[in-house]
Length: 516
Image 1 (cartoon, helix red, strand yellow):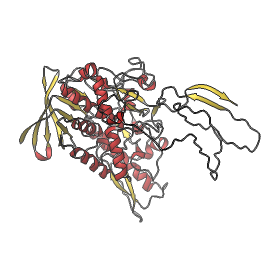
Image 2 (cartoon, helix red, strand yellow):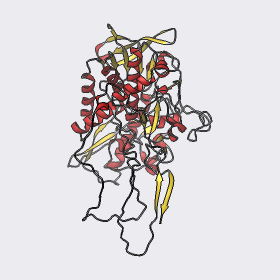
Image 3 (cartoon, helix red, strand yellow):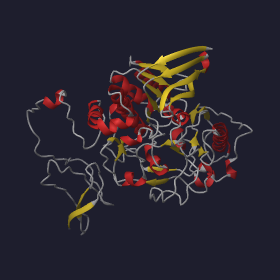
Image 4 (cartoon, one colour):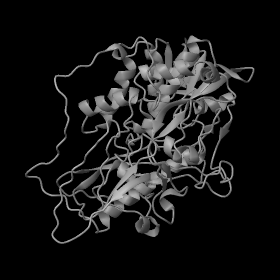
């Protein structure tokens, strides 16, 4: 067994999108970073091993102007240019390239963290991991650690306080919480992909495949032969078990379900699927939820729905509060439970560090939230935003020889301004960087647009079979709006003006006036 010691300013555990963005953020601020990942690829649930889409604040276009900026935005743009087909292996390569381009990052793949050494039960001194393929036992030392491992292995071994399961409705006054607390969580998922070979392909199901005609799947789920990957988000199970310690049992059941669904598509006679074959099936369950560690603040349902403007906000989310039934695919009803805020919401910094471990940051799906609020922050682009924020905070903490709480108490302005300089988006916080040349620039133009005419002579008319709406900015003020109408018979038209409430919203909130 080869034993090694590795020292850095910050050690990041977990190579999902939160960990990748945390490591890159700290490295770009000239700090030495160690990134430790227990798989052979980066990307976590978005990697080629699991293949979950990277969803975020736009919620598939509902919040159409809410695309993440910063490192996650950089990854989105680069992937769209280089990989418009969405090849999962090219996505793996892009993430690997971005990490390897940072000279301040040392990457350790296939390394499972085994032990944590503490000082006075309040500070992590070092962590040790085993690189199985190389038989290397590696000890990682740094002044600060960021747990982006999802399940929170380092935080757990360090003794950080955490929550597991669902809180009662009264604890945080959450209408979406159950009446009584329990230990159920969101389940795990396996995907599969198919391919048309252009000729008939036989399928003989394995003996362990589930007969889904004897389950509630047929009644409650929509199965299409054309669907692949994330279209089958509902192939979920294990929320009533321990999704960590029962991981192998959950994987076996999910694979049995997938092979059973494929048997139904191929052999039930209900689909024209003769030429289709299985191209890929996952072997690593995509986990949604496990431990959530307690910070100085716990994000809750009302914070999301009321879009609370936190003083220590570090970015935004916009996915709905998306809660799946614990029984998953075998639940005797359809789909998931959603609560959709009026627009994007703000994420406070105080959920990104442990309340009782003095040098431990958190990012990803192990941050300090209630189970209900976790239903929105868990999506990967939002996790990536929190990752960049945690990496940036770690760099500030190292710079000032401070702990995570000190960043909030003493260096919040510097921290937020640093996030803005690194292309983070903090709504309502103005860039005050004296060294930013853009603030000193003079903008000139050769002409200005005073009228906008969207009328197109040959365009087909838009039939008002239902209400239509326009979103109009209040700055600059619009003094006149002309709408051209024609009717086949006498009718009436009602025009209403609404404000959107919060400035980042795009849906009607308060009626200002109307005209008939």
